[in-house]
Length: 320
Image 1 (cartoon, rainbow, N blue to C red):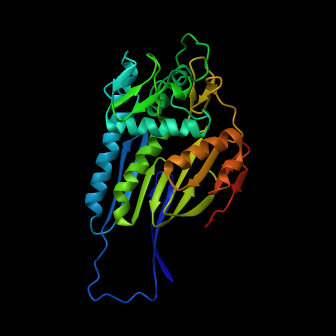
Image 2: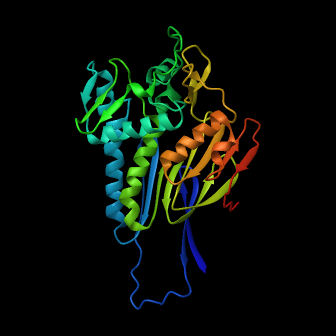
Image 3: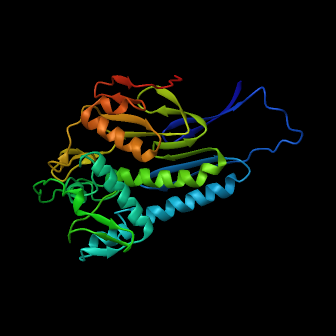
C-alpha cells in the first residue's frame, strides 16, 4: 500500500493528512479530483481550524464554521449576550433554555458525574476569583490589578443542576453560575465532527483539541512527538500555557481543585490524551494532570513534567 501525504501547519503543530490507496483497487476511467477546504478562524477562546477533503468540502467547511460560531455565541461566558451568560444572570431557579445549551450542560454534568466532581461546570465564581474573569487574549494584554481577595470555596455539587428536555429547562439554585470551559469546547468539536463525518477525511482542531476522520499525523507541542491518529481525537491540557497573574499577584492556572476552589497541584504541567471523542480526550487529559498516568492507559497519552521529561503511556503510534 502506498501512502500519499500532504502537510499543513495547524494550531497544535503539524497535522499531516494521509490517504492510503490499495493496490487491489481497480483504476477508474474518470477519477473525480478531490477538493480541499482548509479554513481558520477565532472561536472558543482559541483559533479553530477545519480541513475537509472531498467534492463537497467547501460547503461542509462553511457549515462547520457556522456551527462553531453559533455554538460559541451560545456557550461563552464572556459575552453578556450569550445564552449561558443570560442563564447565569437569571435569578429564577428554573430557566427555559435552548436545545443547544441544554445539550452542552448535559455533557458537562455527565463529565462531573464520571469524574466524581473533579471536573465540574460549577466552578464559575472560583475561576473569576482566581483571576480568570475575561478571555485569555484579554488576560495576556491586561496589567494585573489588585482587588479584594475572596476566600476560595469548594465547588457546588453538580447534582444541584438538572436538565429537563421535556420541559425545555435548566434548573439550579439561584446564583449558581456555570462555566463550560474545556468540556464545552470538546462538546462543540464533537458536534462539528458529526457534520463532517460524511466527508470521510477531515480535521477539526480547536486550539490543540483535535478530532479527525481518516489517518492524520498530529504533533504534540512541547513533547517532540508526532503520533498517528485515525478516526479519533487527541486533546492537550496545560497548566503552563493556560496561566495568568491572579489578583493577588500570584501565578494561577485554569485547572481548579473542586474541593478547595483554588488552582490544583498537578503531577505534570501538560497532558495529552487520545480517545474516541474530544470530550473524552479532554476529560482524560485533565484527570492525568490531577492524578497521573493511569487514566491514559486505555487509549494512550503523553505526560510532560516541569523538568521537561516526556512520558509515553499506553499504546501510541509514534511517527517521530
